Image (cartoon, rainbow, N blue to C red; front, side):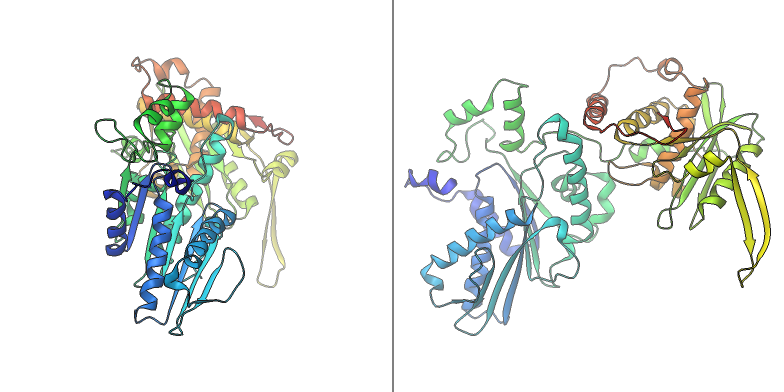
Length: 495
């Protein structure tokens, strides 16, 4: 604990950066502190909460104050609020306040002027729009991206927390309320990078939100400690470790606030997708095609993508969306498109066994009914032989994404100018992007049928791998190691 270490050094005084943090929390409505371990950033959040209590006692016009303290899990938030409660109970400034609950981590007080002061802890994943506190304190909401086996799982959770923060948490405070964030970064694409505006994908989510994010490393520009009472230079030298070692990686992340992993928030940047969109439109009946179908449910549309392979390149001839469409109608239409475009291979998403029944039967039964429910017509449509069920899991998604990325980077794929397809093609680690699956199946089919080969895709790419590509390959390997071996149904093909 910082307090225990400071006991041995009675000359400690708050640093300039502590006063700067306090000043910004008083002047800003949206403020984030990204700082090294034991920098007292959590202490500053608690002091802010105590300052609001002091103001409420000294004539602030509001009749009450309600705060919400969020962390990665509720029990962690409860530890923070329990410390805050001990601070309050130990201060003579608040000796006349009445505590209305004996709960260690819940603060519910009645002040001498009859006003009320409340702070409750909560887990970030349980936050919902129904909460309307005056201020929100967000402390340690990211898990620690630690060993390789858990890296993919942890980063998926970090991305989920980022989405939840942007969609819900940042809007929790009341009209004139405030939200303060403190923590240590975990990835190049985490919530801190997003709030800084460093992640292009989230620029729209920050429009109108005036966030100030300040990062503080334990080292100054000359490599000396900015907080020598806790971390003297000698101790920092011992913590650094050999360059590239696990100790050094931890030091870079925890002490110099440099993310532990450079990861893709999406598999493909928007610029890469846009570069592959066809500029001139013309249509001719293709001689042979490959395709893929993502079977969506009611809440998620289905998507069918068909490509013509020619001269070592794929040109999209169809982008078909299925909104609120029954499975049997979706499969029947895909089968008809297979016939029309002479499709030799079409992968069908069978991850949830949505296609399995049709595949085993070999046909689709189509019926039409009137408003009274009477059957008007019946048709048995035989499935096209090119349609094949495929299971997607964590160990198959990354190799498919890698092949998609490779054909895009060397310009061997052309997309139709479908704006909806462009928005959803950049599948995220935890998200659901229909064109990612359908296009991925089509690309995979082109490789399996010999229309594309690894040699032809990479023959113009003789440059060494970039850091981004190396990270991509490392992530792929981690996915493979971390994934559970899932078995598919009858006729299921593993990518």
